[in-house]
Image (cartoon, rainbow, N blue to C red; front, side, top):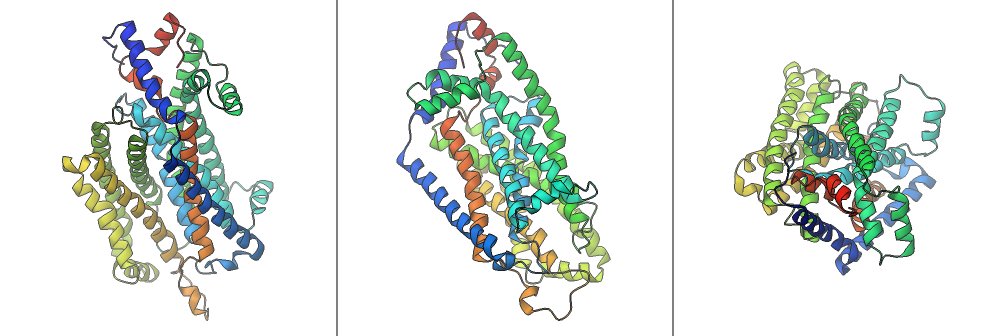
Length: 455
């Protein structure tokens, strides 16, 4: 870290300026933000009602059948797991490689990761049909089952991601505790409890920084393993299109791309809503655009590798599946995802004007939508093309389109992720002050030693 040329007074002024910027959104609440929260709660309520219907009537209210036993629930699960990798990509990898430009956006990436993996676990329970089955999963624990591997790695990754969000947040919680004195009593008590007695002394800074460094190392293999194990759930199931040793890195590459798109959307929204243009600058979008180009190219390589080998062999079941994707009923969706959701963004982002905030936000939105549709294509069409088709089945078994129950529950899960992110930003600073300032060469530990100023 470079040392700042500012004197102590100037460093304290810079600290105060940043503190005011991140606390201002916590002190005010606009009508638009209240309407947004109300809208998300409304969507969640519809989803809860749909889930009640599913619980009381069983999975027959969905479009899931013996052919398409996995549908949009699993597609959504894989999507949530994918975007949860953004926390490790932005926070861990860039932290360990000593890049400092990412400090203003680390917390955005971390809360997206925590919210996404939280609902990834919940959507699996929904897909099980009966929630008590999760109890039996632990009761009759079988380590040879890939589903057990996935449950273990999801729980572990959620725990580490939560700690990775919480430890750097401690100075910010203490700042809220000390300065947001106008807040209700319950909220001030919450800050006091969550701050864990933080006062900015040398030993506390040492512990937090050490924990953050350890978690930065731990979260990377966990992030890779969670998507690799998720890929193994597919690869260990004998289906055309899934019988691949490429699935692990293929999923990981796609996950990093989807996560980067979500972080760019988060940057754009919080930058505009919380007036953080001074801190989340055009340069951040420029860097993220370059990163997205790189990840698009990596993902394109794994896509070519994933489809070229089975297309060359053209086994009967594989051939039928690939024809459906390339020129059949799924072709329009497949080529839209490949061209509009991956190739075109990579091409456009090569040019600097498209790496400006507004164009790159639109591109990121297209990439994220394409990422969800890509997961749908990985799941549903393959389920409809088994190696051994069941004879004399009803015609509707050979097709899949989600019912209103599935659509409502999936919409509620997406709204739930957005609500967690929104509520977090209403109670806690969305930027890590101490990391942003240390990126500018301002040592807060030294300032806390000189003056009794708490961040």
